[in-house]
Image 1 (cartoon, rainbow, N blue to C red):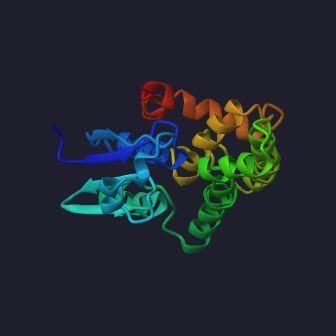
Image 2: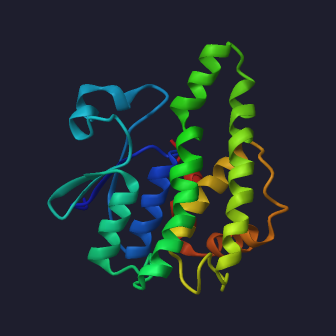
Length: 210
């Protein structure tokens, strides 16, 4: 058993990000599923790991970390993954593109928010409508942001980085909820590059479904 443990949920976007990064780093890990639909994330056991009740939680190097973007930064700094440029200007622009997804699209399209929309309306069909309402406009704006980078072939250059790691979980959600993205050429070229990369392939939710 690995001494690195990832507490995650197979469809969690934030967990998906970490699986990609751990694969890119070549870090073997033990996956401990935390089932969100059955509310395992609200049990005392999981709240002891993360008082927010979120996934992922990563135990690594004798430490326990929460919040996927913070964990990605830790892995980048300790494993030299090159997820963001060293140059401060380019770094800020790459982070802005990644945050356009991870900070702006993802939080309003997570399980708890969409479920609450269903709860207060009493209409199950609202779930898909909610997702489509936020995912497509967000990714259309992201498509424009990609104009500032060379897709060669990844979002910001010739190697996978923070933007790619944040993008692919949102692409999975777009497809799941039938939010159209196939008319976004820059985005789709990045998707093709990521889908051909073994680290992304091995992290895909279908490979981790119960």
